[in-house]
Image (cartoon, rainbow, N blue to C red; front, side, top):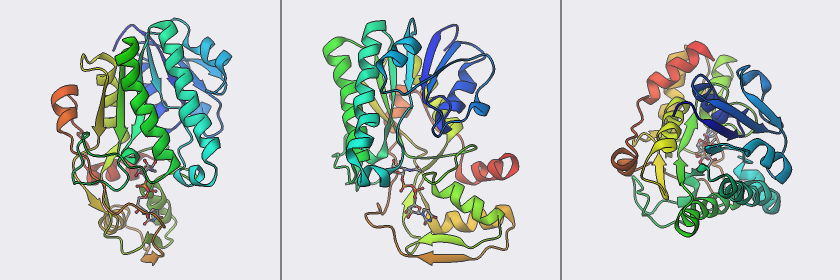
Length: 301
Ligand code: UD2
């Protein structure tokens, strides 16, 4: 995508800021972020920042005026918080997403929404295709599923150009804080030579996808003809948490030991993407394997 005016909601956050960085050299980029978890330091100088809440229609209207594509990444990403306070996360993850879709109708802008592997709950098959049944196990998953379905419906009902990207376990630079993923937690522990905390037996597995691949998927989604669809965004490869811990020990050369903690209640045992739809319809394939992804993180984060 080039020479376009685009909006990234949550553009100062983990995934959003990497996307902004990729878009900024060739496009006019707006960022809507309330900076509760996002960071100004992650934004290039030449982007237009609207500081505000994605739930605020005035801020959203201002940020979206005249844009051709909206990449919707503003969300409350904590699954645990969504369990503790479903209405609060619903306001940001679902109601605000509807505002974004409505604003896009006003502007006739394409919308790329950040969906999630959470829509599948405990996946009925592995790797899981987009056609699998969706039974989320958290309010967060229900909210993401609703957004994913609204995106499809808006294409159907109103002819709005939409794409939903169902992210698997995204990792990379700038992922930190209490709700960040297991890779950033293990890396922090390894750097401090503290024990690496594996929850449960560590034989649960995930499909870890590097944020640079997630950015590439967004760029494909911005221009694809295959709209009104949801795509799994993962690598197609699963890694167990124990293997991950071992890889991080090796790559960092830490003195950390591996300790086991109580398994997380409601944890999903295995998660892995069937990526064939993304390959064939979106023209997207992940390129960063888990080991080289971790090596690059250790090198530069
Ligand atoms: C991911 C997404 C979440 C949602 C969900 C859908 C992230 C950060 N979260 O949650 O937003 O989409 O998938 O299913 O990508 N673990 C340890 N030790 C630790 C921390 C975690 O063993 O110190 C384990 C944890 O018990 C789990 C696995 O690592 O089995 C992954 O945990 P996570 O929090 O990184 O991500 P996940 O899959 O729960």
